[in-house]
Length: 490
Image (cartoon, rainbow, N blue to C red; front, side, top):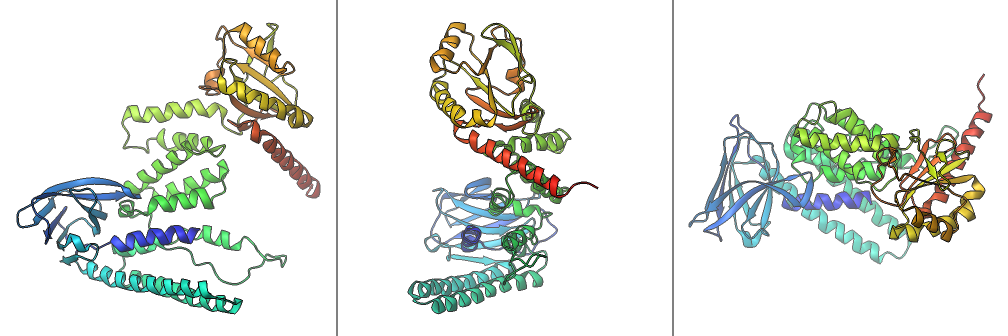
């Protein structure tokens, strides 16, 4: 799957990319466009920002005159990268590499794109055209091998095709390696490196005890994933590469536990420290990814990023009101992240007696925020009760249920009609508690799972995955106990 993602990415970039001219000391750019089949029309200059199409950002525009000529020009310093010439129909475009100080002429026949392009004043364009020709030939050979694999009848036939495929891939890999060595610092070389995938050593690999290391390929791939990526080159942000690399690494290679994700996030931010656009994009991406993740516990990552980067002045691009939104969101989440002690709740029960959340004596406590007038609660609570009686109660789980509704009659009728009297039911008609802020209660139902010390072990879960979470926590506790027994302290 990893190879498929980047082969598609490579193909997208390779088909459209064209290269930039020799850099000079002059800031800005001058791009003379000569169209053979278009005149009297608008043309736009845009660039990528981490993601592939359709996410592009327009940066300049001009008019194609009656002779088919248009000039895009700027004296302001720009960040290089993969730029786009986009025609007025917003559908016809081509990609090319642009760097600060470039002065080039492009002759375009739109009916023949992407082949209908000719560049003047750019050595690296010639390099890339040569590479594109190589890549086209590579693609035809690759397709031929796929056809051969489809006709393979024996294991020997398949092995022979696989060997040829590996040799072909090695040629492409070596082509790019040679280019990078011969053109150090070139943007095209940086793109080649950014697209590179780790080459996992072939053969079996063994653990110290002599057993086959089944995770060697994963560990090697992950540990060498960023080897060739230049985190100090801001130009790579203006390319449709970085977003996919981050997604592949953070969401597929990194174990989805908050501690692991925090560690890897800090690693990436440390690598980009001192840059402008690369650090900006990395911090934004990691924050957005954690904030919108459906994986339990990723809100702790969000809080970590806000407290350690936004609140320490690293997000310099944000306006004060924008920064405050991040800080406010983190402060709402911070008290109830997984691993923290659950904030205490003391509210009146159906008999007007105060009941303490921390006073519940049980191996696990299921903290439920619900409302008797909530349609979703009416559907979910009977299912939760079934799981509770069948699985959770025998495992030592008790329920502390907080009603968010102020109608006492409706509340008590619901409890009785659903047969859930054995739960600890409380409510807060005088609004004297801080539980809404402490647990960020903005909807119902919301479920938290607490252990015997009232440490939050699960949050915003539902009836379908509570039992699995309890079982996982029990197994983790048993394994921890076994480890202590087999490795006692001296």
